[in-house]
Length: 66
Image (cartoon, rainbow, N blue to C red):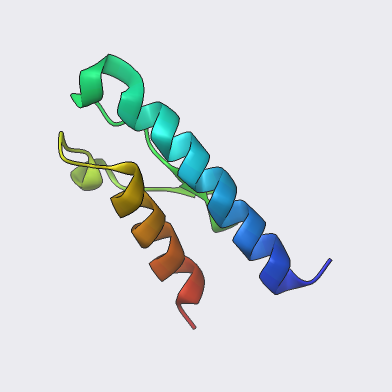
């Protein structure tokens, strides 16, 4: 499996985990989105308006970093 494919799968998994986190506690608490290299979004990223789409964007932006 190529590294790029592995990163994309990791990103998809992160989006799913993000959705679970965002749907918990009526979106008042963000559980955190696990993504590549074993990192979590920082506490400062947690907010009521964190959506699955935004989490996916952050994950994608992270994957696209050089």
